[in-house]
Image 1 (cartoon, one colour):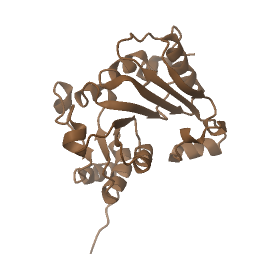
Image 2 (tube, rainbow, N blue to C red; image 1 turned 120 degrees about the horizontal axis):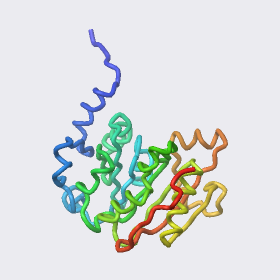
Image 3 (cartoon, rainbow, N blue to C red; image 1 turned 90 degrees about the vertical axis):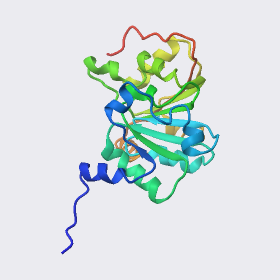
Image 4 (cartoon, rainbow, N blue to C red; image 1 turned 90 degrees about the horizontal axis):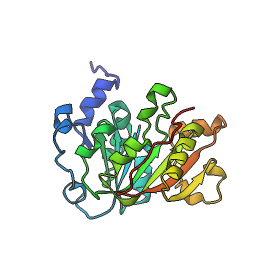
Length: 239
């Protein structure tokens, strides 16, 4: 008799080992060493010279997949520590043979082990945890600490996109950008009320759809990050 096994976390982790578009390095592989594709993702993994765009905290990979389908001449890499989430997008990309997508299961703090200088063109932060507890706000993915980390592999004046339902995270990031005189390409506290539909790219994540139904406005910020400028933290990081 065939016994069906549920898709628990462990089974998803094991299944992902069979996907050639997913990388799950051990702690020792990236804590003190560089990952094998560092500085060579386009040439050795994707085997092209197309731009590379990252989605940090990609969750189920809905945005990574959506962008890859809309922009086939760009390479997209989704990064998240939650393997059971990555499994959803990774399996879709694997089964549908979407060639310009990869996923990495790791902590964002280790990202410099994966990418070299000037290797990444843009970064998407789609609905990251706003870290509202005061003792945790240093973990926000738009803090001066993380922006300084991104500069090591993002091209000079590369673009960062923030999409969030959190007005606190949006206002904090906007304040940081203004304080540091970063070039702001676009800002809106109501993305779907904005007159420029191109900003949406036609992609809504599962949770984003729920936020909209519940009446939350979606905030969007697009700014450039220069390499040589020191990034200062706003005096008030948290209300």
